[in-house]
Length: 319
Image (cartoon, rainbow, N blue to C red):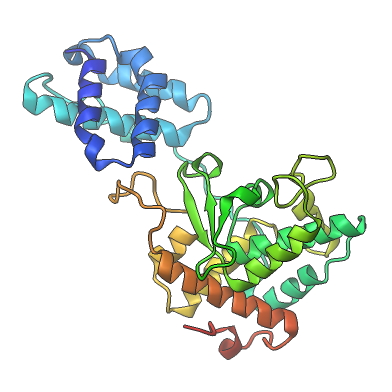
């Protein structure tokens, strides 16, 4: 029994429990890195050194998350094979301490919650040194990112075709798996304020991208929103990615939203989570309420009814 034969048998055995996209990514990972190094080898002939060499080659290209998953997959394959008499021991069993550690997470700069109202008003009144249309697009992109908890590229690459039920009771943004960091579809419920914002954008948007750039058929650039933060006086103090941290802090401090709602809204759920049959609509109803509450808070900051630093005013309106 070769490693590849055993790996494919293990993968086939797991198919019914895996989301289709996850199953495909898992097999691709093995085909790209594990099979060229170990695939033709007899299971019993594979040593710890062989597995470590395969893992090191993946680490060398900077894919530390992938290298750890491959080591995990090798162990899973051997745990599947040993009871069936195909192998005697797991050569990956004692490699964890030899793997290159992940770099420390670098948190993106962001202001404190007590400064959030001033930031929100600065975004709403954004008046950068651009053409009127470009200023309008930049302002809308910043507000949209803040209200939806999206990443920069999720916003700038958003297409009109991804939005559903604009005129319905439950409008939705269906982000495709290929754009997401976790490589799977992500559903974002849209608050009424987001729907109204998108209606404004429609008036000056042309082409497939919601936030179109200066060149026809192209989205705004990677730097459009961060440069806007600089122009508003937030260089070194607030990044666009940091909007997500502000929203997360607000939701966690509100103490009325479950952490898994928050993490799912941020598209942080572990792709190898025990809920292997991931559902893109997970917690959609409570996430909708949470994002609608957040939009109400942001709207209150814009119209001045939300007082800076007030614990009462920072509480969610609908929770």
